[in-house]
Length: 217
Ligand code: AP5
Ligand code: MG
Image 1 (cartoon, helix red, strand yellow):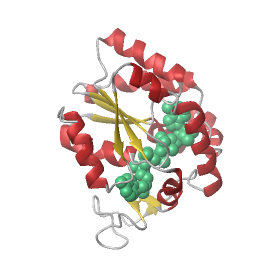
Image 2 (cartoon, rainbow, N blue to C red):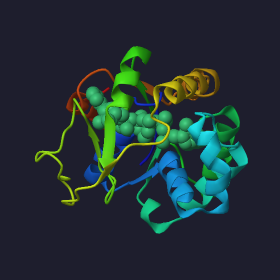
Image 3 (tube, helix red, strand yellow):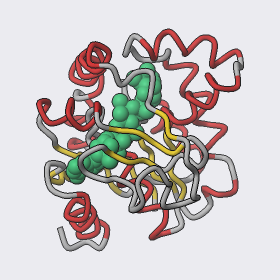
Image 4 (tube, rainbow, N blue to C red):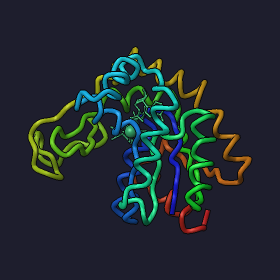
């Protein structure tokens, strides 16, 4: 099963992708996480991407598509993958189409997480994650069961993303509406687009996605 989760910054793509990965054993491919790993390692791609990401702009298509192509070829994608944060532009969507065709793969669903812009800022500004294993939390919506201790790995260090400042979030939202939202009619035209209410609780969003995957919605 190959899926795209499409939605603005903070819509819950990463949260839902992780849940789907655990449930179905298909790989989450987050181009944002991959880029943050490149930045952290100080690689050539990381050095190129750092400033762009901190300004809330999009990293050039050719960098992203090369990264994606290599990632999809890895063995953990054999059962399928969930694209989280890719494609984000028309050229990326076209590259994905040809990549899938070349590999004899198909896209099963494109799931849009619909969330109001006003709610996104609150979600993003409250977000933090475990510095050791990367599991995500939120100041109001998802605290670790024991304060200061990661539920998943027991780590006690947490971090916040460099691009989660209010002014950068505004630029990321603008990039979404201008460059990524036009992909919605593109996938609707392919008959692949389904929307879920991303304003609902995490469990309810997961339930709605489950209905789509099981063919009930
Ligand atoms: P990326 O890492 O993809 O960030 P994003 O799209 O801005 O999305 P986020 O990761 O911020 O949000 P999310 O939808 O994953 O939400 P989450 O589940 O964390 O990209 C970062 C940057 O990298 C880009 O700006 C760009 O520069 C570059 N980049 C990446 N991909 C690229 C590409 N393809 N092309 C070019 N450049 C690229 O949830 C957010 C918070 O809300 C969490 O705290 C969570 O706990 C909470 N939450 C989740 N669901 C709910 C719910 N239902 N109710 C309440 N709270 C919820
Ligand atoms: Mg994410």
